[in-house]
Each structure stands twice: as structure tokens, then as C-alpha cells.
Length: 300
Ligand SMILES: [Zn+2]
Image (cartoon, protein in one colour):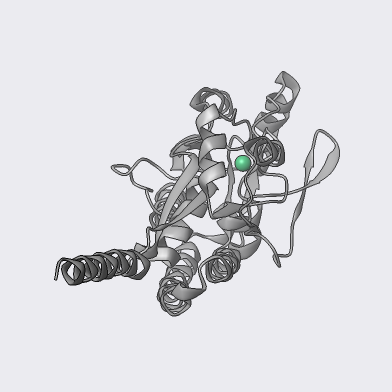
């Protein structure tokens, strides 16, 4: 009898251990995903939904070009199951950081398949990394992130496909809205000054001309000669407005505006989203904010 009781206890014990294990397998922890900057993290959140936990190394209003990685970033990458990067030279620091972190997670280059544009920086021709500023390209980012999530977490395939489909639909709506708003700006006025050259893809996609005293990245400061050239250009080409950016020092834009007589437009969000309480805390809100600011300064 005592033996039988022992056996029953043992069996019950095993069953409860088995059921604990089963519950855990049915509700696994969220997939840890690390993105290099806020725009990628927002795309991932929209596609990954409840299944993933996303962290951005460079947060709101941060400058990814000149980011200095912290020890916590290496720990974050080491624990990631999927790493999302922009590529095209945006994150000059990422390869070394991934190596140092010992991360084994697959790396998705979100710009894979995008036709890169080039730009000139200090006389050299370089790839322009700011492809997310074209909504058509943003849709390619989303598809790449979806495929990366499916490869890292095949059990979530149906959810990732459904979420991506829904989000791509929202981007279609956004694209139509942006084109409609820009159509209201007279073509002759569709040229502005920004402090760094982040809007090449936006310009190509929506028929806009952006002139910037700084090159591809924010690393090189505009020289006095660059600034003088820009001021002459504003006057001779009658460029109506100078815009501020959330990732660059506003003083340069303000002094260019003051010296050239151009008006200061609003703040454009170029390389980072705003904090949650700001006007551009998601990619969709960022694009809406930028077009609204452009239209407000240029439509008449
Ligand atoms: Zn940039």
C-alpha cells in the first residue's frame, strides 16, 4: 500500500511537471528583437505585434550616424533572436558592436532589394542610407522584416503575414495622402533647405528638391564656405524656406534663414522618431508631420 501510494505520488508529480512544461511551450516568451534605430523598431512592432519584444539601440531624436554604443547595447544584442539594421552605411558602428557582443542572431538588412541612391559628401560619391523617407521603399523594409521574423520564429508565420498585410495597407493609404498633399504645393516652390542631406529618396519619390549644407551624414560639419554657398543659392534660386530637423542642431538652419531672408519652416523628422508624446512617434505620424510642415510653409 505504501508502495502504491509512492507510485501514485510519483506519477502525479511527473504529470504536473509535464503540464508545467507544456504551458510554457504553449505560451513562449516574446521573441527579443533589436533594431538599430527607432524607425526600424516601429516597423518591427507593427509586423511582430504581441509576439515580439523590440528594442531600438538609438532612441527617439537620436542621431544614428554618430551614435556611440554603450555596454548595455552589447548585452541587448547578445540576448536578441533577431537583429534589424538599415544598411547602406547608416550604422558605421554596428558590425564591430555585433562582433563584440558575441551575438549569434541572424541580421536582417532592411534595405535589401532597394535601389540605392547616391549622394555627394565632401566631393566623394557615397550611398545614401535614408531610404525609409520614400514610402515605396518603406514597404520593402516591412517585407524584409516580415521575412526575417518568419525565419526566426516560424510558428508566428500566419500572424506576421497578417500584421504585415494590414500595415502595408496603411502605408498605401499614407502614400496616397502624401502625394495628394504635395500636389497642393506649387511645383516652383517645392524646394527647401535642410541641415543634413536626409531627404534624397523623399525628393525623388515626391518631386521635391532638398538642398543641404551637410552631406550624407551629420558627421561633417558645414564649413563657412558651404554656408555662404547655400545662402547665395537660396537668394538666386528663391528657395522659400529653411527647415529644422529633430536630429541636428537648429542653430545652423536658423542662422542660414536669418542671413538669406528665407523663412524658417517647422521641424522635419529625418533620421529618428519623436518621443511618444511628440508629433512623430510612429513612422506614419513622422511622414504626416513632415508633409504637413512642408505644406504649411510652401503651399501659398
Ligand atoms: Zn541622416
